[in-house]
Length: 230
Image 1 (cartoon, one colour):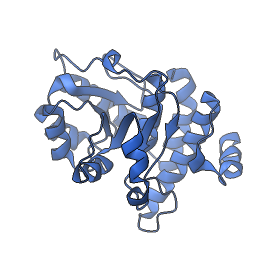
Image 2: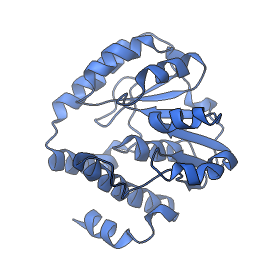
Image 3: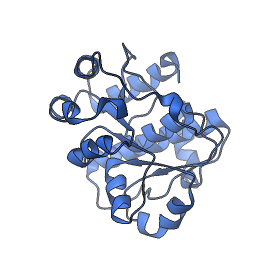
Image 4: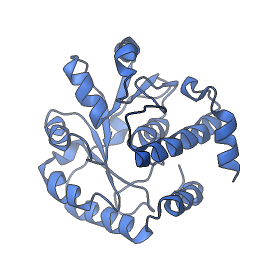
């Protein structure tokens, strides 16, 4: 994902939620400072090229989708999903998180050798300060939704879940599957529901870029295409 491609979408997200670029840049730069001079995880170690990757969410459907996760060659989870999978004795190959869920567990996972894609944005500076120093740097991949800078990358995406999909795409993944995703989960807040709508739009954009069809978007493409055309 080139930032030139991502930037217009990023601008639309900022406008929709009233977020500011300066706060995202500040979080990006602080994340870089916290990891300065540390050896970070080398993403070339991932052997994901042309392999099926499960992008696991922590929605109510995860219980019924669990065999899809077990059968997946590569498993990438949000922090919440990773905790749920751990409780079922399923290991993840990578965690994608902005530290708003189970941050202490995420820190422990880095020390257990699980790579963690840590995202810095305008609302999580305090979490970065508190938890990044507790992580094992050689298991950390730092990311931003602003322009990439120093060793902080931007692979695309907004929520943990869709960022995981964009990250897997950047790592050369083959087919993407999405167990545990529930766009219509009635238990989420209004703000989370708005974020899920953006996640659906971004996944619609990603499937177009990949020439792939994500089953979780069936029945939503008309709405997504209209939103992307705005």
